[in-house]
Every structure is written in structure tokens, then in C-alpha cells.
Length: 207
Ligand SMILES: [Zn+2]
Ligand SMILES: [Zn+2]
Image 1 (cartoon, helix red, strand yellow):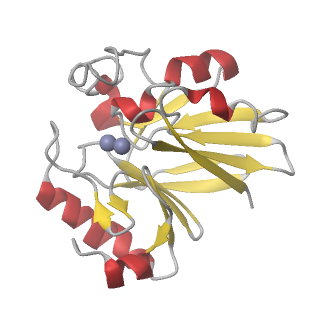
Image 2: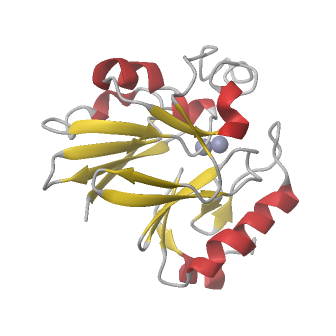
């Protein structure tokens, strides 16, 4: 197994997830937020093998350059948002001058597809394409853990009013990809506390 370390980063309190294999001293970073300085300490002594992006909104990718420069590890993103890393318009950073400067990054090393399996830090992670909040939103599944980005939150769902968002697709993603994973599936969202599929089935007013 791996240890999951998480905390919110940046003005939009975006959750970063650090997955630490304590046996092999390998680590993964999911969504390196904005102002990622806080992640460096818990990663001390680990070899960071990859940065996985659930999607390319600026609050999820703001720390990308800093983290990449430090660890020299490859970046993974769904192919439908490959160009968002290099476009301040698409990643939203042009749109909110009050919280961020425009940001662009080098392209990702790896482009993801639905159903793909990634072998990283001694574990298998399945890529589920879960669009709706954004067209290339993905969730990463390992055993009873789903890192879902901005698809599903505790008692809420991702917004669909940003460029490329689509409410029908979002509900389709949740209904067809997330809920069938079963009540005991732990869901780790891009904002706010973790939840489970069962809890959301009972308490989420949007479902
Ligand atoms: Zn987002
Ligand atoms: Zn977000």
C-alpha cells in the first residue's frame, strides 16, 4: 500500500495528494496546486516518479514548473487537455487576474486515455475519463481509492460553467463511472474533505 498525504494549496484551496510508498521510498504527486512549497518537506527521502494531473485548471497545475524542476519527473494528463498546459486562456489563468498571473507550461510527457493502466510506485492506477467539469478530467483508481479531481465533492459536484464544461457529461461520468465503483469506494476530491460513494449516494443533493 501507500500512504496518502494531503493538504490544500493556494487561494482556491486545491488539494494536492502525495502518495508515498514507504517500503520503496517512491512517491507520486497528484495535482501540484499553486504555491507548492509545503509539499517538499513530506517528500524528503522519496524519489518522485510522476506528477498526475486530474485536469488542467490553473489551481491544479500552478506548481507544475516548480515541482518538475525540483524532481525532474514526467507529467501525465488526458490528451483532451494536453494543450491547456500551454494556453493561459484554456487553463483559466487569464480569467482570474485577481488570484493568479497568466501561466503556461512545457507540454506533458505522457498523454492519458480512458481505461489505461499506469504502473507507478509499485502499484497499478487505472485512468477513468470522467469529463464534464472539463473535457479531459480524469480520475485515478487504485483498489478502494479514487482520486477524482473536480468531478465529485463531498455533498457537491464540480462546476460546469467554465469553458469546455458540460453538465450532462458530468452527470454521465458520475453515474456511469464513479457510482458503480460501489459504496465503499473512498473518493478524494480536488477540493474539500474526502468522502465515499455510499455517503454521496445518500447525502449529495446533486445526485
Ligand atoms: Zn477544475
Ligand atoms: Zn479545482
